[in-house]
Length: 102
Image 1 (tube, rainbow, N blue to C red):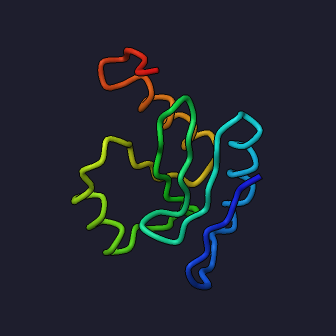
Image 2 (spheres, rainbow, N blue to C red):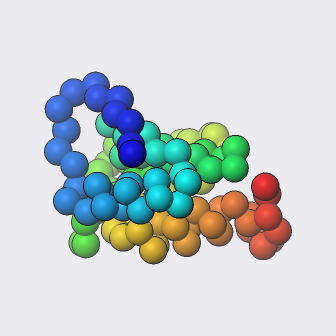
């Protein structure tokens, strides 16, 4: 199951626990964060930063700034359900040209 790295008390999105459980079942490493995103997800040597939102949820100004300024290789994903997040992770692993990176 997910490991926790709490820095301070933070409310979690209601759909987060189920999404993390589903990712864990597929063999992803899942680590909860507080900032800059909700979760660090790893598979096949690639790291993915994931921001989980409830339906209609929006990025905070700080999250938007982080996305603009991030210089890391990993992809940053935002989604409200397991299927949308998994699709984004798989697309990232394939690369923009559709070729697998791993």
